[in-house]
Image (cartoon, rainbow, N blue to C red; front, side, top):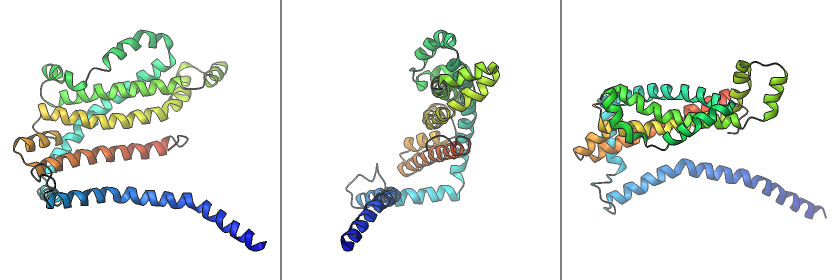
Length: 271
């Protein structure tokens, strides 16, 4: 009887350990899957399974990247892109969050302004870039504006949705306690909407890099988007891939930074 109990105990322990073991396995796979993809790409390129003119081996791309890092060439383009994204991001995020809080709390404001934003939101931001270039010129101002427009709508709708999901009892308690509109705004609506706001911030970060790449294709003499476009024009495919990897890395690192901020300022949210 004791042997059966021991066997059952061992089986139960094994079952309890299984989820943790699977989690470690999946985490290991997630770490090595990009390396495996690069390895398969390298082999396929070296064996001419894929056309090296369009998909040079990662080793060649890495060599090109190292040359550009050693000459500091790529850093000027990264700096230009980060400056444009940072300014445009703030220009769009701040009014988007504030207006989202107002619309989330005020049903009359939603009824008046909601249809206007619903009509403007689907318009592709790149489609209005020629108009923005006409108004603001080909300098950085036009890049700031087109990014700000894209960021604004994502923060507006995510913030408004977060406020509207606030349990009504919280608002009723605040009202019964004599809370002012200012107190309700910043102590009830804003904390309730913070998880949605950070979701919007992450989405807006990704959209910002998409928008700036396209904007730098058309009207810039610096920036990672310009670098990619110039590489395409000269058929410097390895350099073009370096630009693609760089802008992908910038977006990824920005999202990681926003996730760290969310864990710091919104500890109650699910991560």
